[in-house]
Length: 196
Image 1 (cartoon, one colour):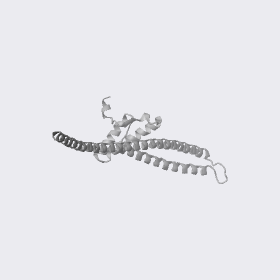
Image 2: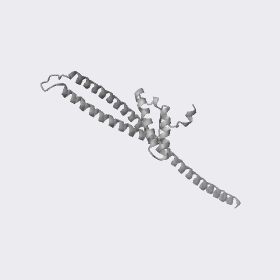
Image 3: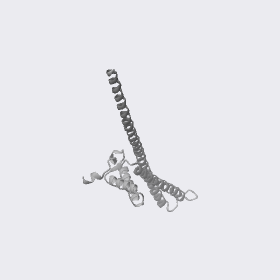
Image 4: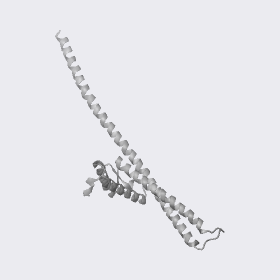
């Protein structure tokens, strides 16, 4: 309970993002990875502070609605998806090669066909798992991108409302001074008519 005061107010529980348990674990791992990279990357003070806040939030099952943190998280998942894609291409090539090695030129099974077939099934199982991870991370990335857009829109809206309020205050004060001058002048003219 004592750590609650350190949790950013603009954070969302990751259990409310529509993610599966596996996706939540991948999200938290990604947050920790990004936070560690941000803290040791020699970035500016604001960036390291943001990374520490994101790290604290992720350890408590929260996603921070901070555009810079969400952008870094999105880039992290982009890199993960790229690595998975490369692994899938490699394993697919390997499985195709195994298919060629199972049969000899006459179309008969080779002597070690059982071993090659087992290797093929192992490769296909790895491909299935990687494709599942790819889909999970793609889903997480879409959600992170959506929250990043919302956070950026909110920041812009706050900036517009803040600057608009300051302009209204300035106009209101200026107009008040003019209205007091007009009422003052009207008072003099009416009193002058009464004296005459």
